[in-house]
Length: 128
Ligand code: FES
Image 1 (cartoon, rainbow, N blue to C red):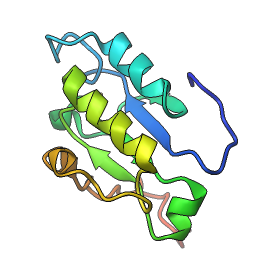
Image 2: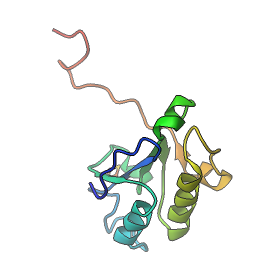
Image 3: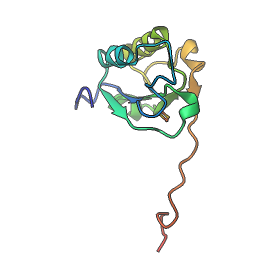
Image 4: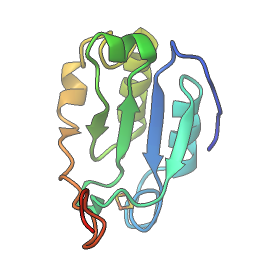
């Protein structure tokens, strides 16, 4: 975790950094700078693989408490592979992010729905 925060009025960002995201498999970008830039505007958590490597680099923007109360939900963004994309995320977070500010059209190009995660056998709810 780069920046801890308990401020309920702040969005939070998860940046995937593992086998694909943040690696040489996604060339042409300074991954550390991208993460640092995002952390200037929102607490950032660095995550291990989120299981959608074909979308690398993956960034998830989580709503602030007011944003969640207004209906905002985590927004998964794919192919965040440029300083411009990181800047667009920063701009949106500054405006309030999910539930507070409309998703900018340019970020709509990065939007994706993650596949549902299936619990491992024997770990399903109600399994005995
Ligand atoms: S390394 Fe990011 S989704 Fe796998």
